[in-house]
Image (spheres, rainbow, N blue to C red):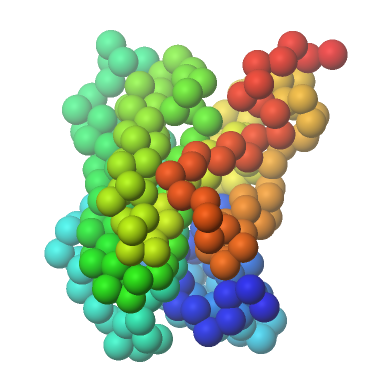
Length: 252
């Protein structure tokens, strides 16, 4: 087990990519604390599913946009499970719409969640990891940071900022044995992408050289690698997991 006895925090862990990562981390021996905002049923279901598979996962409710609450929930997690070794920031939202009609609330919600949440939880754990002189921070970004679509100015801005934040923080923490990397998924089959997939239909698969949508497990496998000792000499990297989508190839 590559993460045996490690304590991991996963934000946005009750659904989609986060849920897949929680299960993968637990299967590798980590004690996983996952953050959810409001879906108690999904959180309870995941806790039970992980327990049934022989793993450890505990749910903690928190709004990732709240700086003080992020600090408090990290302290609660450490009292319950022990010192944090791994932070994976996955919590994110989309509020797509053309910029000329975008409301301030739609901009702020995306930036405060997708970027602010990363800041809040990194701030809550960075010094702890630095003092331990080891640790892993993994941020979930998106290929939209570099390959933007109409209606995603807020989302693209948030993920582009996450990429820059990841690289800058990696430089600051490298000397303390803490790595900071990001994973940039392409089209992954989750609830968040359902509307886009329904509108685009088979066109999406034609855009992807591997001719299939990604699964949460595809992202989770990379997350496990980045969280493990196997990635000890990798930091400040944005790893695209998109089936070749960002290559810009013409469908054949």
